[in-house]
Figure 1 (cartoon, rainbow, N blue to C red):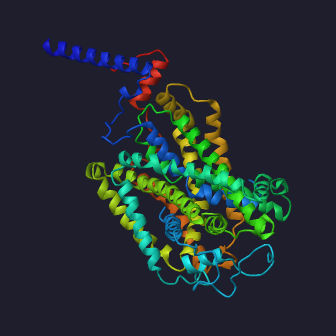
Figure 2 (cartoon, helix red, strand yellow; figure 1 turned 120 degrees about the horizontal axis):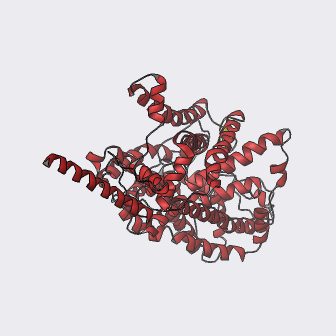
Figure 3 (tube, rainbow, N blue to C red; figure 1 turned 180 degrees about the vertical axis):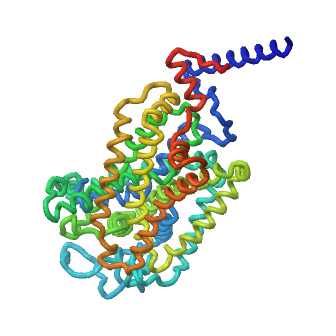
Length: 545
């Protein structure tokens, strides 16, 4: 009898606990419903604003100032190797304190006989500007061909070491520490952009650059016949799609890593929309600062805006140094601009390091939880060693391989697979239900259409056309040797393999027929939180017997 009474009491206690959980769920306390497995304790954000600043700092990077305006320049208005940009920016910053600025004249030891100081009287003279030669001959000391890697530049190697040391000490304590650092690094660039915007639009000729920026070439978007057909998909839409992924940082894992430290009831959709608006708005606003300076330079040289700059990083490392050098107090403006780029690059690098560190810590939680300084330290050392190749004389060519392949084709494919997996295997309705549990309100139906159809469809089309319209890699019309494209395709293949191989391993380890294994891997039963939510929504309390 005593055993029976004890059993009945336990059942009643369990029923009461379930009723309390469901009541809390109805009141919006989703965190009270525990999952099937108790989570390991993890650090969290000190304040919500720190999470938002970290996300904005990560997403709003050098690409918003460097890559977005360059794509507009082409089309008229439409992690490890990322560190090389930071190294170059540091180099420019250190040399911005000199008087005069070292990229002003052609009488330096690194200048070639082709160096020409352009002005309105000699706009059509053939040659290279002092700023171009400073980047190519002094900073990069480029080899003549992508086939030649050259030697390690020791000045850049020391700056590379300094960069990783700074990144380590800003990341070694995790998001609790990084969240404090970004109060400055994520907000300072906006102050500088505002200053540069007002300074830029007051310069002579700024209107020419802004007109070029805001006047789209509709023929590139509308005319898809013959040669323009390839240009329509490859030169415009593929690059536009890649830019938004590159700029937002989608597919790298950093935003997911940052979000994993939020509370469970965090409104993820609101954060995602806000971040996208801020990021795109920053890119658009930065374009005004860049193109006003382009217009000023074109006015001083008496040439059209489209003749002002060459491709690639030259937009930030050639145009702005040249333009700022013409202003009163050139050293001040140069220091301000390059220090802004450093804060942008650091924030983005924080996110890249955090994404890898979080993944490793979660995979080996019992051994590594609480050992963040060691995890981040090992990662920084490894990435430092791998990035040494980018501070060789041929480092710019290596950077361009990674920028063209890992930041383009592979990234688009990875995100397309993620989107398809979540929408069609995990289930778009279940995804929407999870978010509803988190934020307490139903998900707009339009999001489901975007997740399941429009986004993956758009990515697949861009990926297919990038394969069809494939062309061997070149940099400034210099063709790469066979191994350049081979390395690029290896990177793309590794991205695909990282999706396929883990899946095959899980499939082999699972028991049953092939069909049974696929069903077990692709379908997971509802969690306790989902069951309680559905029960509360249907007005039913599910009691276990």
